[in-house]
Amino acid sequence: MMTTPYKNAVLDDKELQAALSQINPKFGDFVTRVAGEAWGLPLIDQKTKALITIAVDVVNQEQVGPGSPFGAHVNMAMKQGATRAEIEELLLFMCVYAGFNKVAGCFGALNEILGSQS
Image 1: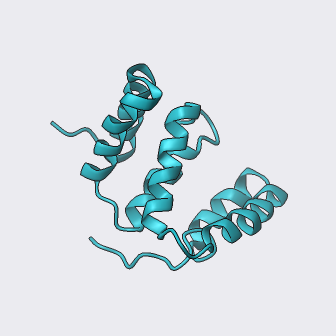
Image 2: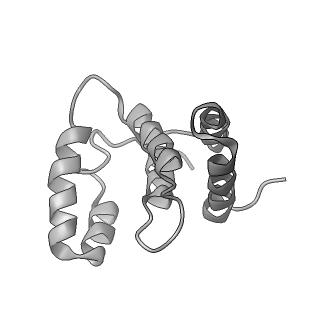
């Protein structure tokens, strides 16, 4: 099922905003306003920005635990037209720059989010 990518992956995604507000209403509002402005910058497309957020999660090891952004960023990338194969290739690419051990955990989390793939 292919969805139409959002013009702004933060400001146009009401489900994301609701999830952020569930963490804390003031936090949700703050993130929506600040990240929404960053996602509204015009030169880098939404899909690329979503893939960049996954790369940052790899480096920061933000793929597990309550409030972890990795799952949200994977879902965001998928909504912007990224495929599982592209995300997997990004993770392989990140092995070189972030380390194999960091990426291993991300593959595990990706399998939990999208389901295992043989």
